[in-house]
Length: 163
Image (cartoon, rainbow, N blue to C red; front, side, top):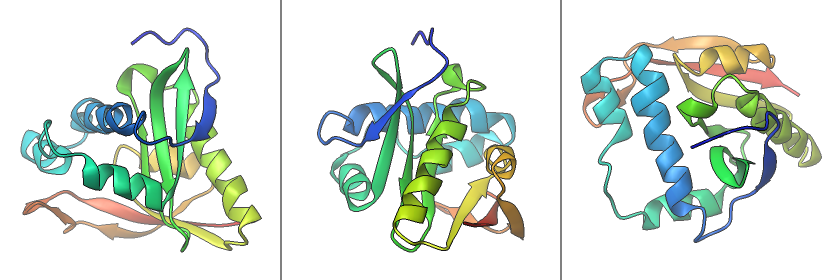
């Protein structure tokens, strides 16, 4: 993956074309970026199998407002917004990190939430994602040290931001 431009193009998730690219970003972000702050067993539990039936993955993206970030026609990130204001996913490919992709995605989600009259956003952010959320005004309201994924403890934090 080469990312030469710094500003991503944002668009809505398009099934079926975005199924594999977004799943790849999810896997790579956990196995790359999140692996800096979580142990190998936590990373494997969270990421799950590399090869899986992606019907459920696609259905989840289609039920949410999913925005996809592209740089040079390559998917480099995505985020989901649910009707109750939950930012369910925010993932950026590790090779595109530090280029404002998360900021662009979250800024667009906040704009969409305001248009939908959602008064507050909330998320359950990983240790690696918390700084990105904090930079955009989210506040940590609860540590979740016992959050469990596939039987393995993967701590995260509940964060909120009033709009």
